[in-house]
Length: 343
Image 1 (cartoon, rainbow, N blue to C red):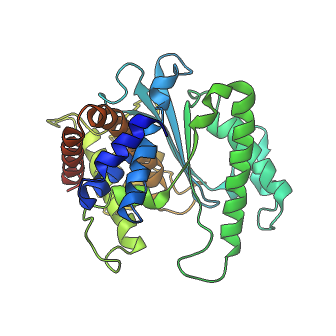
Image 2 (cartoon, rainbow, N blue to C red; image 1 turned 60 degrees about the vertical axis):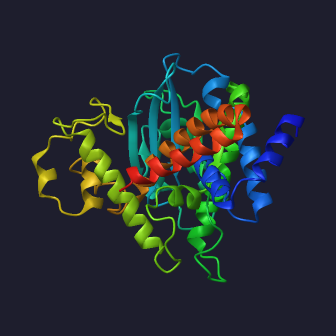
């Protein structure tokens, strides 16, 4: 660590613990541990270069972020575009947003039903991972991603001592995707290797949890998922509302999402089903896994949270290096504004 960062860490030690926690939340850094650990987390995060300023976008016009929510029955991914000149000033445009049942994945050259994915066989899962990368995630008809975010998988369910087989399968698929993507990026665009990122699902979920002070019993998994689906539904309703008064949180590419004006949407009461039909269309139950909205919601939220953290990192780095007191004030304001916007 250089002298200037050591000096910053020293000055931050005079700040209150809650201010350091808010700083870490704004940066997408870990908030656990004692105060000195939290300061170290913040300083480490602030030193990281931003992928959105270190290189030109691959397609020349915009940065493309691909966020993946892993699952066998419910594999969700979202591809968003950011303006190359003002990536943090304009809402992103969603170019692709899908949920797949990988056991029924079918492309022009591949059919997953011919593989025995029930059996814990690395050979079959490697074939699936290869097809996913070459013809789905790196679909030649879609803009090539500059940044790939993959949700980190858990090792077990809650506090269970046993590791269920489906968790092993998803973990194996995660490892294969990382290995194959690393090899692909290394050979084709080696300067973008650092842009293959494992993202923490709990950190993202916490970032979009309106009440940061709730108890553990109030922060159950189901409640958190419901909140995220409701948040995405609110954003989408604002996006497709022709009478909106303010700029939406995101845009949908009209060429890729033609279902925004279907009358059947108005009859849907379930927020999860509404999100599914808006994004996947009236036939969303076919070949897209179970009717859950959290897989779609989480893939979008991983992308959007990452962009916000990058924006916060860029601004807070400049503010803190010039004046720590002012930087902390800006950080507190970011924190307050973010959680007020979730209401």
